[in-house]
Image (cartoon, rainbow, N blue to C red; front, side, top):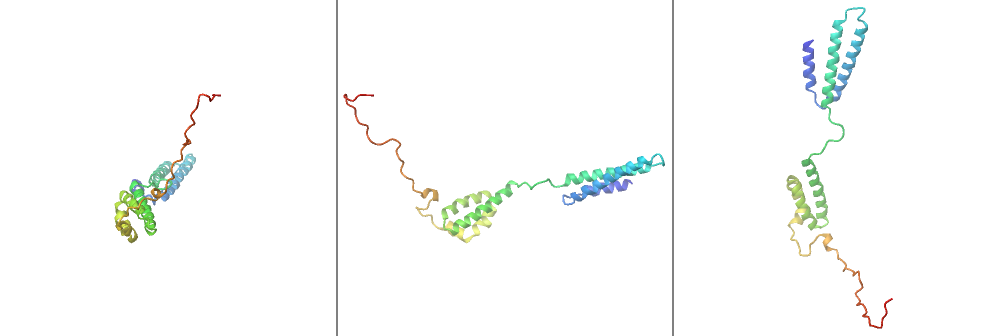
Length: 180
């Protein structure tokens, strides 16, 4: 009996997250079966000597509870897995690389230059192995920046400000004017 408990403890301690649902189900069945056996043993106690049955069903119930608990502890947490900071930075670098590829194909080299700095900051590996290997991006980065090359927001013409107060000079008053 002691060997069986030791083997059960070793088997359940080696439970992986993939095996956790099965361990929980097995533990649940063992625990409920052990309790049902204890209840039956208690009912048969007046008729026969059931001390050995009580010990056996108690061990089965305990093994079921332990197996269920280990399966519960090894189960992955519910919901989506939380993204780590390096994973997030890599994802952002890939997104910005895709945007830079589109901008390079459209000939918007200033945008490609701005995105290149951001991609390098987020993930140097994506920058070196993906960003800098795209021929359109490399062509944009190696092209000389012209003096008229500015960001799209900077090229918009800004209308001259409209004065809030009329620019006419107020008429001068004479002594004959009356003030109402």
